[in-house]
Image 1 (cartoon, rainbow, N blue to C red):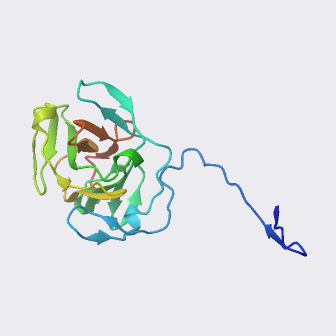
Image 2 (cartoon, helix red, strand yellow; image 1 turned 135 degrees about the horizontal axis):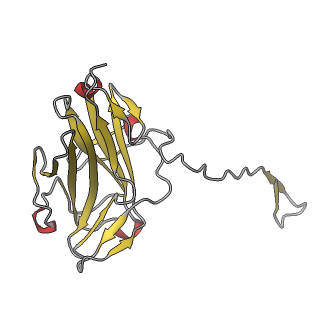
Image 3 (cartoon, one colour; image 1 turned 90 degrees about the vertical axis):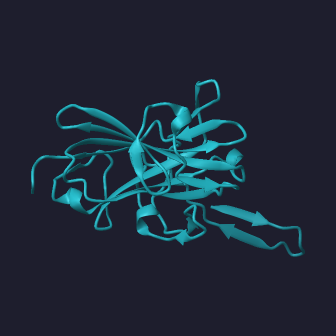
Length: 212
């Protein structure tokens, strides 16, 4: 409880009741309020899938010399089945993988808001046979990737980076690709030639061989 008193005659008092709540560890995907944000196409979205809190900061940056440094951006990955969010690392049945949607929300580092940037996506797939593949995506389609930073495709363009960016990654049927999926989402600052991405907490899920 805080009592604020001014210098009027007689003095006027205002009583404030303050509740301090600490962060709950391990709850980086707690549901929050639905909000609106840019999706890179001039539209806005307000879906519950993107209404998760983003704490703690979970990103890395790659500078122009290839060095990894911490970043103040924050990423929330969303894997959902019929609009119901799944925990990161969730193992899907083949039936569940038929109705899969993957997206992300980026809380841009305060120092980067307003800068010119482009979004980049990387998918890492380990098949149930053990074969490994990497992919990158343009605005609509996934392509094989040679693991060279210079060949990453642009999935969204932002002449002026907003504070919040919603990223569509995939929607469809992956039941024919049993295995492990890891998705990296990031934005590249064009002037600084730096990539900021969800390196500490990438999106991760597994498609199993079982049907149920």
